[in-house]
Image (cartoon, rainbow, N blue to C red; front, top):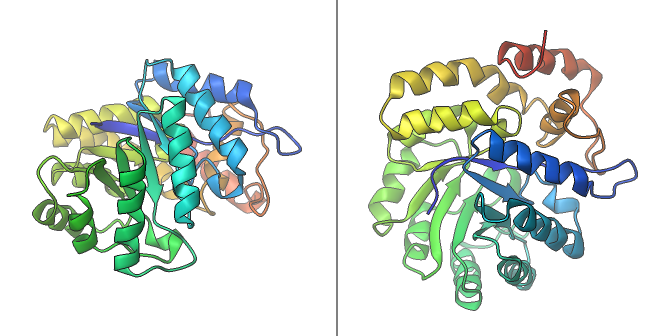
Length: 293
């Protein structure tokens, strides 16, 4: 359904914590102009963990209305409660989202059978394409390839965002999943190799600040021009690395603020980027050409 560079979009906020819908509109327009291939709204980078249900649904609705069919909108609708994930996914479908991205339930550490039943029920309840999202470094829950293989056979489940950084899983998923099940990298640093092994693209943090470069890199890799893809990636490696100096989305929101694209606000318990990290990130942004020297 999707390929290329899909931005894990931040959620801009005003001082005091309210969502800055004007800046959200401007960001989406920026990504459309800069060749981003899809918008992922209210995922980890969008501070989904600190938005209440009404805010969550409002951001997705606003993204769909702003995109107006010009670019796919994938709605982050995962939760550690199956009933809440169903509620969010139903709202995303009603808003007109192209697909939903559902992170593994975090904190409660379900079994593999629990994961299977969780995703199966959501897929059977809400008729919208759904993408699994495995990021065990944040959730303390690793969805094993065997479980992904079982879920690939469920109607409406169309792919997985794999943020493990384990490139061996590409081949394992290909072997266990049905034909047509799509694989998306959730790790910018290894995206070129992920695509070279058979992936369809990346759901990217780096694309927030370098959208055109991430699109060009992913397209080159998909077209088999790995030399060009690796050349672009080499220029972006400092960004891939330093956008994780502190927990995502702390660095990327600060970077976008430095670029003049959003305000500086972020919600507790996250705090603005530490003073000691700022020169490091600025240097990486300048090296990548996204911030003037």
